[in-house]
Length: 278
Image: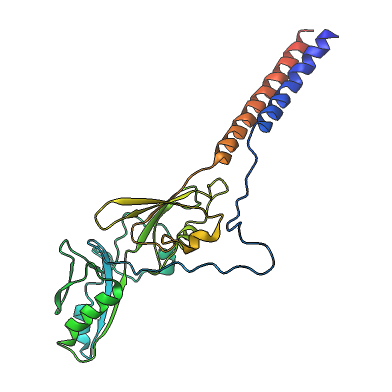
């Protein structure tokens, strides 16, 4: 009788251990955004976040297109919108905008030098640092208008990039498709948060003009962040999604599963050895 009880003990021991370890794990929290918005009824209006056009900084890269009545002059002025790579150049595709930037990929456009200038063929050096793209467009238009009648100018950021790290599906550095990108846009480009990401404590680190960094915590579970000054992104913003307790719990469950498999194998081995010795 005691012999049979010993065998049963070794058989059921791994399963008892699994139940104990599973019950000790924390329960999964809700992973939905905007939890303070009701499911039905009249929904309240979310206050608009103030949008401030980003300023051009040293080492930014600008795509500048100038069109005039002289096609040859236009070609020369737009010649700077090429990569420094020796490979044949193509325009940036939408797929490139939605994928992490490769370290080998160079952006297209004019580099803002240490003095805050870009150098455009024929037009020469133009001060753009500290301006937004609308103001830079006007400055380039003024320079081109001295030489050509009714020039057309387009200016946009070529390297408006943000960094997304932590518990997202595709962490990496992303070029925003326009300068009015939001934190929701960046997270969507990174494949959204994983189930383990802490939605109530997303960290955004912003670089200031003097080189200092400003950290800011964002709670995606409440809609209030869409009214904050950090809703719209700026160049080189760093977004970090912290892993929650569920990440550690899932690791514990995986380890418990491995221990259970090992324990089951040992139990079967013990039972087989016991029977062979009878």
